[in-house]
Amino acid sequence: MVTDLRLALCQSASSGDPQANLEKGLALCTRAAQEGADVAILPEMWQISYSRCPDDEAGRARWQEMAIALDDPWVGAFRSAASNLNLAILATFLERWPGSPRNTALLIDRHGQDVLCYAKVHTCDWGMEKALTPGESFEVAQLDIAGGFVDVGVMICADREFPESARELMLGGAELILVPNACPMAGERTNQLRSRAFENMTAIATVNYSAPDQDGHSSLFDGMVYEPTGHPNGQPREQLVFEAGDGEDVYVATLNLDALREYRGRETMGDAYRKPGAYRRLTSDEQRVPVFARSDSRRGAVITEC
Image (tube, rainbow, N blue to C red; front, side):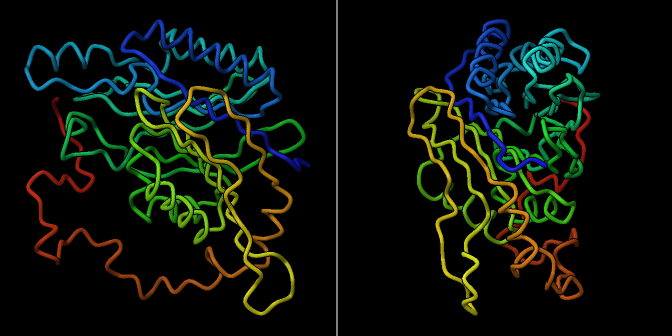
């Protein structure tokens, strides 16, 4: 069985050139493998460096043309790298999709096989991501790691702003959530991840762009906030395993899966004592609070054009 899971947080700067990003991404994964990582994680939309969709029609068309399909050689290169390096890789890109592209993360296992394809559900519809098709669900997959398996889910950047994202993944069985990111993370947003890990007893590994693209602060929380002391309220412990600064590097952080699984079997967060029948508003599409009624809110609707 897997005891320790080594996660490579590939915190780096990028460019708008997909070929250059491919070469750099492969180099980052190679270094991750050399340092003994089991999984390498790239920041959000690495293929085009989270390039913004222009406001003008011609610019939007050029931006949309950068989208690639799952069978594109750019994606295939990461499949080959995963197999050759014996390394699982979370590759991120602008995915070609009917109507308009998706912000996608593809988890590839160490054999070069696709395990989980996730499209960002909580697109930033108040900004450039109104030009994207949002994903429709949070799925969990079993990732084959040397010595065993780990149940993994993905959420992308703004998904972590909504407690339901991590909660849905926890309910799907996720032990580990991978979070490709592209926004400032120092301070409250990193503390937000602390809460998501705490309340779901789920490890969360986040990878952001380094300076000058963003401010780094990639992190790993192990989701364990109490020591097994027998104290009725638990003895608090620090669940932050690692947090980077703003520099470019491949940071390898280790998650103790055995300890996490033991913790999930004895502590009270997660799903054991929830009262779903009392949460009826959580799954309603009705907006009851006037201040939150926004004309640009799609509430999961799929758009048909960019």
